Image (cartoon, rainbow, N blue to C red; front, top):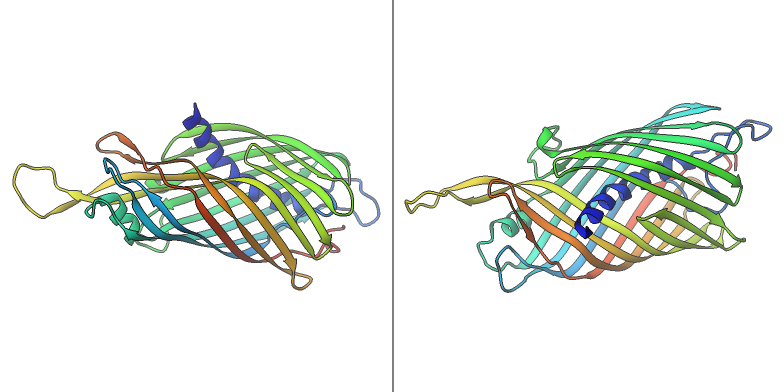
Length: 341
């Protein structure tokens, strides 16, 4: 049960972060709000384009059948994302989004020294190439819908990008939102994912509420629960929890299985998955009317991390320890004056 819940949530978090960006690009008329404007006052800014560096220093993992743990000096991830609006009409908005991610693991020690999986993790560039289409369609001044179609390719492929189906994850999602007031909106949605690990259907809900000039909440249930504090229009903080997950298809070099001694190797397909619940604090600082700086710090609690050996049809629990996390992001967000807010 825990494993099923973990796998389901792992697909939810990346979608809704993207969905929130599309929702925050409001639709307005020049004189009066005849159509719904998704989002609430003082909410954290959406991202039109961003460059992000994330890291997890000093944690441990256990390779299959090993008694002692291997030590990871750090894992680090570089993200670049871009969203381009193609249609921005009063009652319909359409955007396309692109994403490229590069993740690396740097081991301090590997136990046993010849662990094929960890040796591959230590040398591989784990990549994610993604494309998505976003649609936002207000129904009236209170209700709106938002949809997302996406595809990504996640693995250790050697080329800059790959569209090999063994790395592919496809997703379809829909959101129905109700904006009761400028300081309150909520809604629900459904997410369908079909990928190399599994197929899942995940319902979810969200609530954005601003209580006063300083305090509010931003909830995506069950993947993200955060309290917001606005110092002023250019500075705010979020405190709370969020779900984090990475999944890759990998080629792991293993000894050839034959009765004659030799040093030859063959590549065996693996699926690698790591997920955690993160207790975090995030700070946003507006630099110019269009640009922002985001800083994040916190602690990651391991939830479910495993490797699946496909030829052997075996799944191994990697049992990583918890550890600190950090993130720095520079992003572009249109001024609220341009969004009708």
